[in-house]
Image (tube, rainbow, N blue to C red; front, side, top):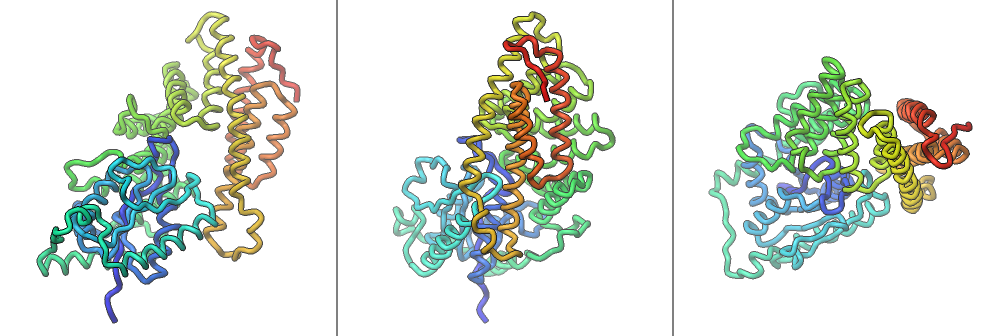
Amino acid sequence: MSEPKKCFVVMGFGTKTDLATGRKLNLDKSYQALIKPVLENKGLVCVRADEIKHSGAIDTPMYQQLLLADLVIADISTANPNALYELGLRHALRPRTTIVISEKQLSYPFDLNHIRISSYIHLGENIDYFEVLRFQQLLAETIDKVLQVDVPDSPVYTFLSDLIPPRLQEKAEQLAKQVGEAIKANEPAERSSNENATLSLLVKQGEDALKKRQYPLAKSLFDSAWQMANTDVEIKLVANNSYLIHRLALATYKARLPDELTALRQAMSVLDDLDLAHTNDTETVVLAAKIEKRLYFNQQGLEHLTNAILFYERAYYLLHNRYNGINLAFLINNRVDTDVYKTQQDKIADMILANRIRQTVLRMCEKEWNTLETHSLRDSMESMPANDQLVADQKTIENEQRFWIQVNKAEAHFGLGEMEAYKEAKANAASIKHADWMMKAFTDEIEKLSILLNKYGDLLTPAWQEKL
């Protein structure tokens, strides 16, 4: 029996921010739904860098795979610098069998304009089921073609037609081919020991722990993943590991160890590695805003409210979405109850500004709800297999999005004094399947907002009134 062909997948992992559009894309979802199933169905061994078991730096096996893999699929979504660099290496090392894909909204660099790139549509946290089916078929057909056609797909070998591809000495080549065989695709997610774990396994365990709200465990796992990603590497592009830093910071402050205040400060220290003063990565900025907000409500000083507002402002203008908007409006109302601005005119201005943002949030909620309905699977759910995990995952994500749209809508109406609309949106949210903590987070915020608006609502014209 002949040895199965190997495919090395070049892409980022985890959730990455596309700095050109401000959108967050779950690249693990792209890999697991669009790429890996197609390769496995064709009998190819599928290898991504974070799945390689290795000691020391990942660089050596990565370079080996770029040279020796029978096929390379490069997903350059979010213009990931490492993925673009590795694609360039592959094009220099091998004349053919390289496939380039990306999310549809990628703004291509000029030097890639002449390269054929297959695109897919990503919804951020999820990918529409029918888009999965469409792209899987397209990728399968593309794989068949590139493995059969003896024509260069590398621009290097296209324009330098007399170039001879390099190769390793025989012994080194045999060692390199063993890399893909080191992957254990079915390792149990419950495994507690991090010894000899792949980066992929640690991240998967960390994400599972976050979903189960096991924050101390998640912190330990993402800390191990972060250490592994930086082992024996002298120079790293911080952008490549921003996802790990984000998850470590999140798990750190959620774990509240050894106490909440210490955990919050540790989490902010973790984020400092991403240049908080200048970054335009919205995920980084929003995490910093959340931490500063918690520090303020833990009575740690007015500067934390100011910082939280500055971070949410930056996030709101970078990524114009309902979440950043509703939090920014809430914190601006909190500023009215301080001496940051002492004059009544300034306090009136903040009350008006907060409500203008809420009006924008309502428009965002309506637009996002309509988009979600367009991509909904409700009409096709009954025809899908009950155990289809992809469908189940998409339904769960859609339900969570619907819930948060309705509670953001409810909070916006509450702040605007539109109580009938508030009650309707709150009831809609309650009717959507959700975890208890989600509704509690909403009601806690409404209680705080109610106190503020009852105290300062007469600064508005007409005056805000809570008539429930």
